[in-house]
Image (tube, rainbow, N blue to C red; front, side, top):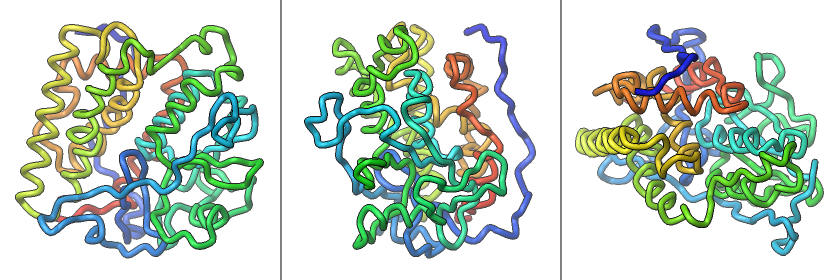
Length: 333
């Protein structure tokens, strides 16, 4: 059992504030983004198959930033900008790695409104923690996508990595963005210690990839497959897989501190952003209610452990998380 001095708050009362705004369901895109259609339909049908299973769409922008610029996008301080939602676990990954690597001064960011309404993700300064788009002057995140590609008709998702120099979206796939932050911006880390941090070291890559292969479908995406299931068969399959994944993670963490051994890796960051939302949101709102994370001794201690890594707690905004899910994302009964 892990020791910890900080206990994450568990909010038992469901958020009913501003329920009058509940009109639309957040849609998910690819293996690492929260998305809405450019034309919000209020339906998940376009993201489910004939069996009623929730199916993710691929991210559209997949260019890379490299330290030497060989990709066409050279890593430079204050050249790149993140558009994120503090509620979104996929965007949360990018903020977590940005913080752990000490890239706060090198990569700026803008936070969208936690409320997703008619136009999708919106920029505002009227809610705590949300910000206007002072970089491009956009009203909605879809405006950023259309600025990058006027013909774009895909999903409007966070996170977005924007190139201020080329005035375009480099990448909107969180799993790729965090790897760029991990290695390509080392020249701009605040401290030598942060420069040396490597969340995807060569000697652990096979192990990390192996963990990601089951954590993503069973847990990261599994909670959404439960919440957005459109048939009993789809839900039964999703919730079984989800708790098999959590049980497996619990067993691993009973023997070692982190998922691949004694050091924090990308695999831990990817799991953490789901776990920190689980008891407050997914357990109830997405009907993932067989157990809570606090019922798993090792997973619960591990979540607190990750939360206490330098700077990580500041990236967790439970108000944004709960209000977004409970107010913006009503789930089918």
